[in-house]
Amino acid sequence: MIKQVANKPWRLAVGLMSGTSVDGIDAALVELEGLGADPKVRLLAFRNMPYPPAVREKIFALFRPENATVDKVGYMNFLLGEYFAEAALAVIQEAGVDKSTVDFIASHGQTIWHAPQADCSDGYPIRCTVQIGEGAVIAERTGIPTVSDFRVADMAAGGQGAPLVPFTEYLLYRRKEETILLQNIGGIGNMTVLPAGAPPEAVFAFDTGPGNMIIDAVISAATGGAEGFDRDGAAAARGTVCRALLEELQKDPYYTQLLPKTTGRERFGQQYTARLLNYGKEHGLSFDDLAATATELTAWSIADAYERYVLPRYQAAELIAGGGGSYNPTLMAALGRRLAPHGVQVRTQEDLGLSSDAKEAVAFALMGDRFMTGQPNALPSVTGAKRAAIMGKLSLPSPR
Image (cartoon, rainbow, N blue to C red; front, top):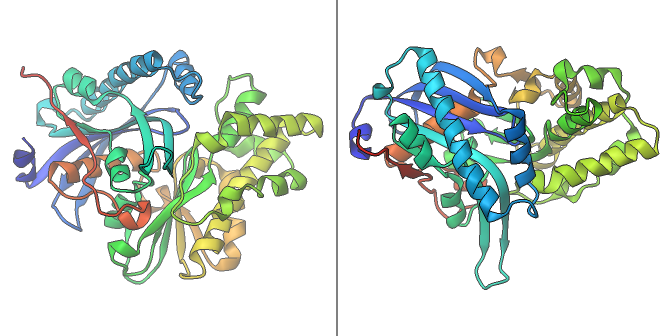
């Protein structure tokens, strides 16, 4: 089957992604053409399928290790497989495509645990990661071969299993004459650096710190869970940045950690946010002030990462932002102010005629295509792996 797909001049694929914000499942139907370093990718359809509130709460509960018992993880792995399958079928139907013409589905799943630093307590350098959303369930429900569980292969090769999207960003966005920054602002922020005319091994990327995660948590607390994000950055725009709190947050050692580095809810999740909210109560800050401060922290963390890790080596011409945070005008304005002194223009995926929402789902479709055509789909220069892995595991549907 893999050989059949590899021999086709073009392939149809569905990419599926659920990120750290747990907003829902992004599903993209794409047409892929060509092999090697210059693939052509065309987005045919995209949709986001929100999780039911009760399911979202169950996912969040798994982020706390004391709640993530084997029975709950197993149950949610299969339950999310059902939802991922539903999202894949929905985007295929929306495009008006016969599902029998879709060559494969590529699903990132939902990360519930990511431990990229090696633990050598038992004599081996153990790194681990857990994504749920069972690929076998997706394949069986859709009747389409499904590639899933990407990150573990890179970790087995000594990498951090993240970030993964820089691989596809290199293929699709690199330029000969200009150094470009690609900044995803999801729950976590991550930056990819594409030096002008650079080969793949010169690309580097890392997590900059919290993206929307803390902002979202503040808004959820302010509204009793009725709202999950700062719509149009309105709360932050009304509030005033608390400089003392901002300076305290900037002291987190993650921001000065050597590359490669990745992070997640294990560091900037519930306990971190609880400290932020408690500080607000003790010092008489409004929720709007906390939203403004969290927004400024995200903008600062991105600009600081550029100054600390990129500027000593490369002068970037442009930062292209994607992810949910790129729709937050207050955040984007703060980021623009901080990068303007360095001559870096801040733009969004939409400014380029692309889709911030679909970007990561498209990326996993392309990574799935590389798996199906027997090509590496990771950048060791980014993840720290010893070798470029062919990431993914294939699940086949039972014969119809």
